[in-house]
Image 1 (tube, rainbow, N blue to C red):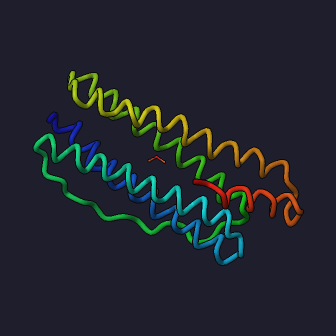
Image 2: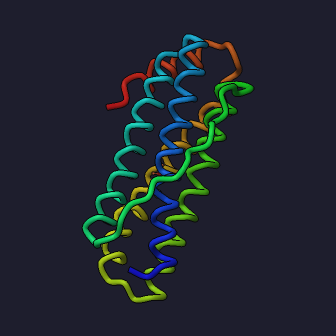
Length: 161
Ligand code: FEO
């Protein structure tokens, strides 16, 4: 595999697992604030990120590349409000989208056909990831803090499959 492409993948495994770590931190914040539904949503999100990282881990192995895991940074532990946590999650997903697009660009540049196919799944997934986070950000903007609406949304997100 092209060295630059390999580096992007090694970095992205870390980025996906950092995402999982950050979402677990957000879940911990919501647990401490007794918002079990929001915490549940972030547990599910963290689980997806672990799967994303593992997909890339397996892909590198399938391509004969040794995976070298990198250090994962400490995520933020406190957020100004539920809204601030979801806004950070949404902004984070936009950054991840840019990183995934960077992998796709490099795969195009070096004409790596297997990566071009592999990365399509992530490109589609990011559309979903951004949509889910931005919807919640927009809903929270309409809900006054400590109103019944926020408890209703917490209840609703607690049902995420
Ligand atoms: Fe793995 Fe949330 O992107």
